[in-house]
Image (cartoon, rainbow, N blue to C red; front, side, top):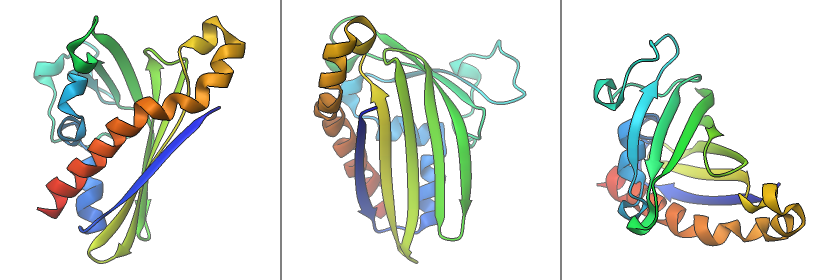
Length: 173
């Protein structure tokens, strides 16, 4: 499966970077405006399934088992694309932290995003995003999709470059 990876060093303590990335409002703050993101709902383990986006609390930590329903409309073109992601892992300790999410419904046949954080020093953190994925074309044209998979970075690079710029701007002040 193709993989996209990008990392950035942030002049902020691990605990601050980790806390920021662990919340819905962090996701909203990091997503480039041109993606047209809307968080439709957040369901945490134990929540009743009737909640909607108005009832969510953007300050709550996204623990393992949390499902996030969102939609995007990149560049305001075409219909909104729906996306449901589930936090499958969340761990921290010994100068490192990680959380992972998987798309359970959306445009990609496979999408696994690992968010890794490492304390470089007391005041610096390395943030690494690693995405393994299959492009939508794979299901319809496996031979062509398999060849094009590595080119997915063309779409991911502008989005993650902007996410990392925003991470630095917000957390470094």
